[in-house]
Image (tube, rainbow, N blue to C red; front, side, top):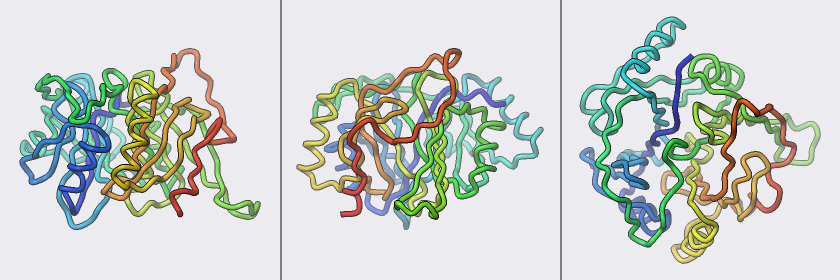
Length: 298
């Protein structure tokens, strides 16, 4: 298996860079800068960028960047992919420069999600200074946060993430959109990598037009979550779910739309798990309280 340390970055595609710049700075509270490809970088800690928005003809999610520890780990990942007859693509030097890494490869899982594996991030170590005063984001060894990806080919996608990329199962959820017991259940599996964040990736048993259910960023206090809620109202951002606290990772958060069509969860207080003491379980509710997702359809 491949030794993934954390979610290092995400890549979105957008038709309107100005909308993403405004959203990134004035709503998320991150530092924005121009990318050489005509896109946008969003900085949320001492690294040069954690979110790369590229220009395109469609608003969507493009890729998840997974961090490996070293060049040796990167070579071991290639060996593992070859051993399992998994097709992968080595990124050229220009793409690596855009992602601020030494080397990168990408592979598609059985549901078509793009996963970029890299080593040797290039960091400017410039101090994060939010343009609107956000104190910071919870990153470091826990990575950027998490993503939940569509997995219509669910079983094969789970086996790929677990057996090839090395993710471990944290917990399980099953859902229906109606009260009709004849409606097939949709599974959501939450998976972790080699850090203590409860999940770095989740997979949802449905196709999603935007290419991502949601990405999550975490802030160090509930006051930052509340201020972000104020900014959502101030800037007219579409809410996807009200404030609530999840059963599984205990994150207190809300959800909102991004300019690329997928949701962004903005939260505080996520669990940090000792995996040697953890037992996999199935949660039968999404949240302890709150998280009314019906607002996203209003």
